Length: 166
Image 1 (tube, rainbow, N blue to C red):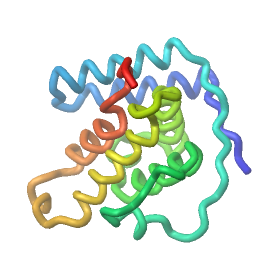
Image 2 (tube, helix red, strand yellow; image 1 turned 90 degrees about the vertical axis):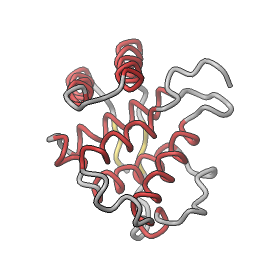
Image 3 (cartoon, rainbow, N blue to C red; image 1 turned 30 degrees about the vertical axis):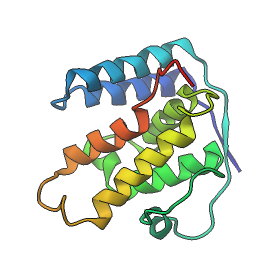
Image 4 (tube, rainbow, N blue to C red; image 1 turned 135 degrees about the horizontal axis):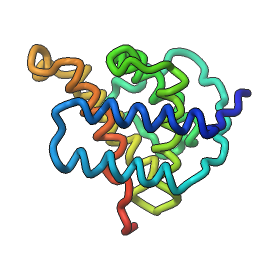
């Protein structure tokens, strides 16, 4: 088992990923969300998330519209998100390392806390469904570029960060 701890240096790398996202033409709402993530990161010292290796290739499961995330641990969500990130080449697009992406994802998952609905599981479900839509439909082929994938994935994952209800 590998323990993922975000120290100050890694914390700064995650903030660097957020800065890179600001270079993309984002809406005011997206910029507001990025600022929420940044302020949340600056308020917390993250607790470790333990990663337990998943068996087999998870990508075929993630391409299923009926994928059910409700029994997943945060560790499993992290690993599945990393698989999505790698398949969509988001590390390459953002010019960040796998470790930087992992630490960013850990911080976002933690940022949801333990709310009954607007939590990490809900964020993961939305992100997985966006991934499914990108991969399963021909509607997006030719319409979206890699920058769009970045915005969709990060937006799906962080769409309820800072939500104060439920």
